[in-house]
Image 1 (tube, rainbow, N blue to C red):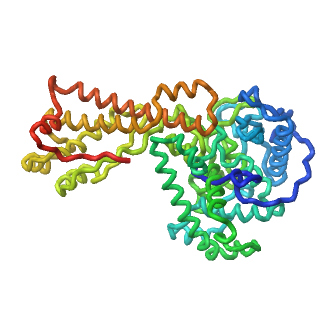
Image 2 (tube, helix red, strand yellow):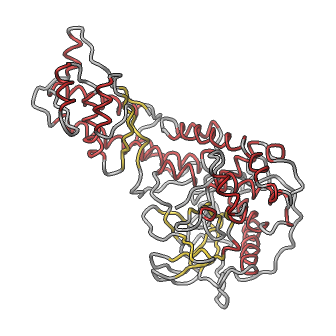
Image 3 (cartoon, rainbow, N blue to C red):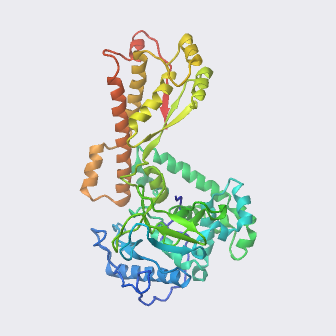
Length: 512
């Protein structure tokens, strides 16, 4: 449903979101009901401890500033055509690890009791940021066919230039709200793309560290192409009296903007290419993501609508589906993980076949590659190991007659001796054990740290992620040992027997 990325807050380089600027101070808005439905009583939002308990309540001055900020954002939405809805913007207190300087995060909650099927809110397209609005249909197709710039990069650049205009920008209240959220998810944590080297050490042993590096390199490639967008859409950027992108914005600022947009972009279905990726006020990150939810933002005519899939009491956070994404992707895109995620999996297990052309032919005949990815999904560990075994057995065949029998056979079966089967399973067990050994902590140690309840937010979300990865690896290890136990009694590994007489088997290498 969503994909995303962008950046940090108005004050401080580390916490800057879309762009450092010095906007004129807005007059404090008159107190108004926070509820986005006229005629309904106000929900008090300065402290939402009754909804989401916090061990560190925000200072009263910060809470009042938070209320004023939400009121100004709500007023802007209503003044520009937001129809009456059934939701309110409340505060979610966050752990304060910056000397109490963190304001509570905002979130969208039910403003009244709701039933499944109710329309919670409907945002007109005039308040939605899409490429149609940024570039126009004519430019979009040409731009996307270059395969150099993503929709996220275009949206990020647009908001960066808009932010440079300060209060003169139509989008100023929305950009100010994005700045406040700083790309943080519902656990008050930014994407690891914005973590320091020391903070990334919380993820030691997890494949997500390599994903962070790869994504960072991809963002840098897009940054290097930003000037192309400037020249392709010259009519759009003529309104901005600023330098071309790479001269106006250093890479780190663009990266922060990209990550912030990534955290709140919505992938709309059944719309034109120019409307596919959208930034929707009242959408993420104000909505709460869950993997087992069916509600999602949908385009209906000239608006984006949210129909809830479950009943709500007034004040409860509104939940939407985040798409079929594993926890590693949820953390990378939105800064949170879902303990009940049915789509969770560890990063692919890559298995490399020995360099025999015949074996590659057999693998391709059965829909496999020379380097094959096997996704290990939660609850499907044994099925994945069973799918992997025919491919791994192939790597151990060295006898020409056996190879010829496999070439002439149909299907993915690979007849091998129990000893070879044991060798294959022993190698798989060894790989899984080495993966677990790469983590600096055990499952029990993770459980103890989480039970203590005193972890810094990034450390906590990282610990939860690697804990779930370890549980999947342990599930695979258990499945492999069950296959070993099903072998005939006294079956020894062929690799061990041949080692005694100085013969080595072809290796089948695993890697990420």
